[in-house]
Length: 515
Image (tube, rainbow, N blue to C red):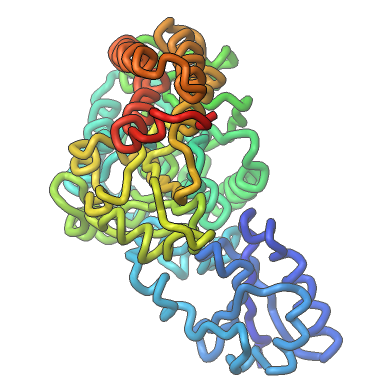
């Protein structure tokens, strides 16, 4: 008789609230009671308020318990949870948990399900089907499949991925690179980390398909230094992939060769910008390059380079597996497919919500997020990272897609959604945006380097009630200069956060105490 399989996440967020202690306690209790269990460490299902989430497989179906703690484990065994029995922390069938059931997991289909470093598990759950199909197609056919899917870059810019692939594929060069930007630095974002820790082979497969499409033989994953667990998971996965001939020479028995290495960032937020990342990989200071030339034509070491975000590349295998129409049938307008939204801040139910484009902001905040953790009314929601716009409750009916958010004065960015209750003062948040820009600016252009410092100083004066009307006018002029004159999005988008705070929460810019 096979031992009962118990699943405990080893995702960094789950570990931070005791997942390792829970796994250890289950193992010890099983030995003491002579119960045969196999503990499988997975990624996280993304329901962070239920972590650590423990699942047990009963007749091939998973049953969930959570949020678990090591102290509660003995009572789990008392109730014989390994048979799927009832318990105060019993949540029912994992896939029937409403928060999970209503999502449309396309990119995150395997995260929280598979053992991240089991090649067998990966293939059982559909892994390598996309790459095998790609190896039977020519470059143009793969590129046009991505174009037809409508996949857009998930790093923030939302540029059509297939168009970028086509440009690199058409570039004449004996050497080309695939660069995955995993320098996930936006506050309130964690999807890249979760995918690398929970389903690393998906990223490897996606990069390899991209390499086949554009004719590259070398790939680099640029991972932020703070993501130690993700770095380890990706390196282990790369080593295993080489052994399986998923990487290296003659991939899957074909005549195609491609390999991947990891480059760890040096702690600079600006390296989330693609050209600054290239500078860092080349061993230089992370400073934004002027364009043109575009990286697709002259990128890493002057060679044509395809640069995509983790989620962009990780979506590719299932598009090749299921076909472009399976992805393009989701979403609204020109925002096709799914988006991995990340709920955080003062939120009752934070975590990953993957759903088709078009869900309303209010549904994300009040339905999936269940409002604020403090139980106070929501005052503001920032969408798109620390440079994204702040939305008031009156705009909760905005559709969460690229075009609708742009029309509403915002941006999607990497899909971060940070929630604030009524106690937040928006002058302080605006000042934080300026201080963040000043701290993280590469310093190459004056509007960003100097403008952010002067902006923070002006906001401090406003918060102190010093010549408020004059300083508000001065600040608005400064925002125009930064938006129009900055070399990249660091200085160019900081005004978005500040201007939206001033527009929607004007009362906070007319009184003291916002510092």
